[in-house]
Length: 214
Image 1 (spheres, one colour):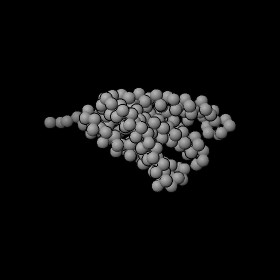
Image 2 (cartoon, one colour):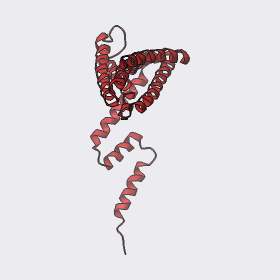
Image 3 (spheres, rainbow, N blue to C red):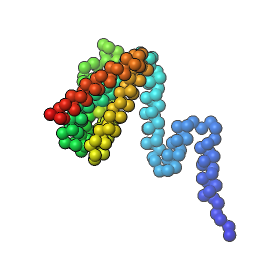
Image 4 (cartoon, helix red, strand yellow):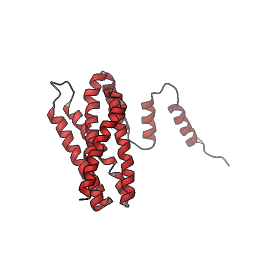
């Protein structure tokens, strides 16, 4: 029985072409994406945006990278992580996991909008040289939302005590991440940074626990 091998030959030819040395990786990704049905325009746009962001990042000096990208993101991450601890833990002790989850998401969204606007409107970048205010505001807002949301997600667990234990671990990891970023980019000694961010986290979480047991 003779089997038509034309489709197989076409697929093999496509794969061989994609894997041929000399083809640029973004071009290979675009070809593979269009093969599985993603429009070429979308694949090209995503590659263009990614390449543009990387180009801008690499084109900046280290000081400029810190002022334009790292510092706005770090401000948001610290604020989102620490400021939302009190309402989340207070809600958990008062009303349980479901309430803590909703309060955490609401607090994260509110803080993200507030911090993003504060960063964007407080400095247009002309005098300080900190770059585009909209970019900095977006970075601060997104980082704030991420920092506030991560330790709210454990409250998807219906058992409040279990959710609290998981949330404690997540908060600890967040604080360690903040300390590492400060050590990497701001040259703050790791042990000092850990003490500073941990004290801030414990203070706010403690206030939430006290209010939750009132």
